[in-house]
Length: 384
Image 1 (tube, rainbow, N blue to C red):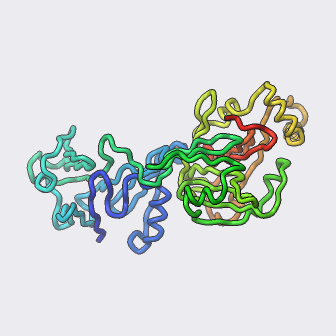
Image 2: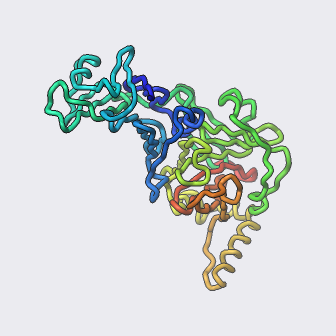
Image 3: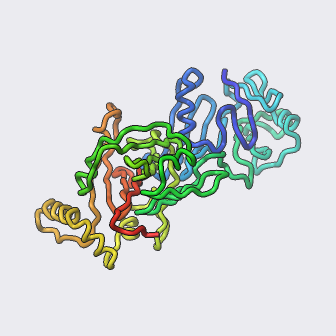
């Protein structure tokens, strides 16, 4: 029988409001004896816009879009749940000690009357059984723990926002800390250690296919620093400076789901803010200039890449399609063949689409943006 300590507006047992989906699932994996089975659900038609729900025996954890942080902990069928609930030092519920309207009043004191059959206490709600008649012995059918009104559900050290600046870097906002700017080619590995702590993992960069495809150069000595809890990777150069930054969206049903927490990244442009739900067409219209001196400068530097892309586009259409002006380079990526996903079904391919200072990975099944890579063209000044 599971035992949970109820903390209104804060937590139920080991589950704390404000925790990320990545953290909670990682926590469940380390407690397989206590939670041998659980399931996840989301909207399969729109996973990049969907909430994620973890279903445990007697307990449901709700992570809304876009934050993917725990905002609601619910016992949806409390009256028949084989659990023990305590509040401070008092027994709140057990299978042989049902929770009644009278017990709620005795333990919590005066409560706000909710519309319908509910009783509301700051950070906790009790829903009475429809079979009751409004008397003191009416049973509590459902119990919900959520945030207190006016309080922000963010825990110390949690990443709140990540403002992506193409061709420059990112600005991170971490709860209870000052904004942190990470600049490509300037921020050092030592800076990351001081500001973000040690990465959860490091590995040497061995895959240079992207550079080969898009005309870049690759040299040994680059190392990835993985901050899974923030949804971030930093590529560190042999000179121990941040060379590239990867931000992950943690979209359910994609190959990278649950390898990283969701990074709350956004890209601010003159035409609006881009995020993981923005379409490729919106990225294209916002980030790829159609006619300007700036574009001519970039086209001159990327002429070989652009020529290859246009020729491939033309040959793929049998020579009948007119060449489009100003198309970004595109590369198809199938992460299933990378290993570790043997036997996984219904995982689609993604597209890598390059812009000046930014590469986006579009999940072709949902249309969501699975990740963004921030890079710097040393021959072009940053846009900010």
